[in-house]
Amino acid sequence: MTSGRTDDVGARIERAAEWLRGAARVVATTGAGVSKESGIPTFRDAPSALWDNYRPEDLATRSGFRRDPARVWRWYAERRAMIAEAHPHEGHVALARMEARFEDFLLLTQNIDDLHRLAGSTKLIELHGNIFRYKCFDRDHPATPSEETPDVPPRCACGSYLRPDVVWFGEPLDAGHLRRAYAALDACDVLLVVGTSGLVYPAAGFPEIARAAGARVVEINPEPTPVTPLADVFVRAGAREALPALLQRVEAGRT
Ligand code: NAD
Image (cartoon, rainbow, N blue to C red; front, side):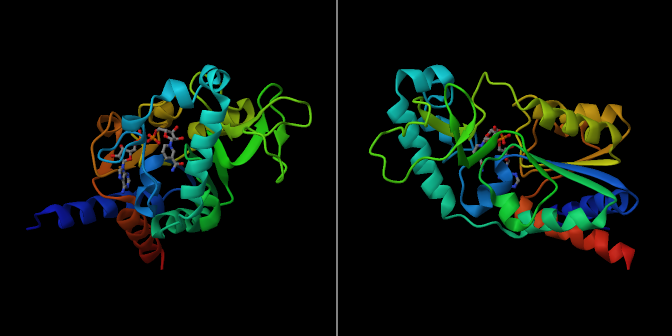
C-alpha cells in the first residue's frame, strides 16, 4: 500500500507521464510560480508577493505611467536588475528539453523574466512580453534606450517616453500570439499548467479550451487553484521538483 505525500506525488507524476508518452502535441503554460524557485517573487504568494507592497494601478497601467512615468520606470528598472541576477532552474530546463520529445510542442508563458529562453526554450510565446525589451509609449514600436541619456524615463527617437515591453492591466495581448496559442490549444493532446494562479485572463482560460478540445490537463502547483477542478491530474509540488521528475518518467517509459 502506498501512502503519504511523496508516493502520492510520484503516482500522479507517473499518470501524467503515461499520457505524455502517448502524446504527439503538447502545450505547456507557465506563470510566476515556475520562477519562484529562481528567487523571483510571484504576484500573489505571501510572504513576498509583489502586489502586497504596490498598487497595480500605479505601476502596471497606462494611466499609472502617465501620472508618474519616472516612478514606473524606476520600479521596472529595480525589478529588471533583480531578475537579471536570477538563473533558470531544473524545472525551466526540463520544459526546454520537452521540445524535442514531441512532434509539436509550444510553451505559453505569462512570465516576463526571460528564464525560459535562457534555459533553452525556443518554441516559446511570451504572452505578457519581456522586461528586457523596451518600446515607445505613444507609438508602440520597439526601441532601445540610449546609454548616456540622463532622462528618466529615456526618450524614444520620436520624442515619446520609452516603456518596458510588457503587457499592462487593460492592454490587449498580441493578436498573432493569441492566434498561435489558441490553435495549439485546440489541437493538443496534453496541456501542462505550471505555477499559475489561474486568475489572469486570457491564460486563465487555456485549461477550459484544451479540455473542450479533448486534451488531458495536468496541473503542477504547490497549492490548489481555480484550475485544479478542471485538471485530470493535480501534482501538488513545486516546479523545480516536479518537472524534471515528469520528464524523467516520460523518457524512462520510452526507452
Ligand atoms: P501569480 O503570482 O498569480 O501565482 C503564482 C502561482 O504559482 C500560485 O498559484 C502559486 O501557488 C504557484 N507557485 C508558488 N510556488 C510555486 C512553485 N515552486 N512551483 C510552481 N508553482 C508555484 O502568478 P501568475 O498566475 O503568473 O499571474 C500573474 C501575472 O504575474 C502574470 O501576468 C505574470 O506576467 C506576472 N508575473 C511574472 C513574474 C515573472 O516573470 N517571473 C513574476 C511576478 C509576476
